[in-house]
Image (cartoon, rainbow, N blue to C red; front, side, top):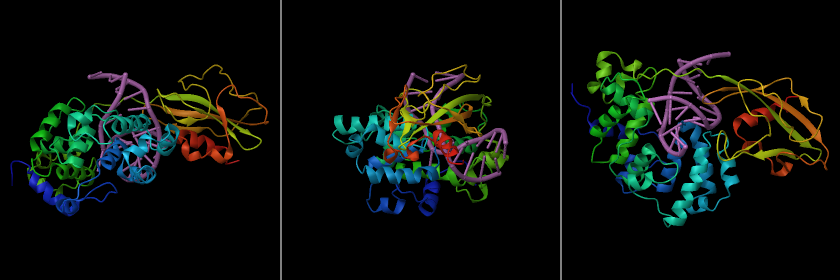
Length: 350
DNA sequence: GACTCGTGGGA
DNA sequence: TTCCCAAGAGT
């Protein structure tokens, strides 16, 4: 029985159990001198913000296939990047991804900063991502504190202060445990531990490399940690979208403003979304609108949406008041955020 | 510190 | 169905 968790024990576990990921350089390869590509590590870390590895995988492969270097990405068109990101969520990440790529490509000679502070100054890179890229891509000693690390630290030290107030204390715990040796592997090891062993529900304490040092396991409190301050209930918002199809098959779409929900994404024109039905709003084009029998339901981070879908078929010469027609050959539903994709597929069920 | 900002999967 | 939540950042 040990009093303190040892980084070496976790690294030994990681050497045997590291998860495979398309962007990851495993412990064995790293040992043989192979270092990760900072561009790919950065890309993966942006995508992984509040997003599961499973959801990220295909997006990562498509992005790096289409834009193999940071310079390629910097030269991409905004609409192509937003379209490729569609469906992954948190679209400010995609806007900042492009901003960051352009800074690196045009102001830093295409080379990512190799320090936490240098990375921290770039768009879309906060405390977590700066530490992750510095440690994983450059093997610099930096303390990553994500949801996994918060959970692992809260349990190791049986810390009951609820998040987010507990964050500074948990960060100190994590900082004290970070080793000088193999900081990159260690960062990934703690997160792998949180993702596979020290899970939010039903943690597998019996096979945990840190079981002998874990206070919460000893106290039997592991599954109730970390504590969190209760969250507010999600209100229901209502709205309407208009899906106009021109007789030649073109669809009427609009580019949403960069700021706000689904910023920078392509979408159907429509009303604002409010908790009380919006009295009346301008139609995007004059037409005979028909309401679909089923509404599109979708849940965002902080509200539920019930979307009324109206459709119309319009003649070639009719000019829209809102949005622009996109030729059928140029329209891919996969360019739309999920909520608008749902609305679109409802028009196909008829 | 409190809000905003997506989505899909699992319990 | 509903709730939780996942490698957070920006304002």
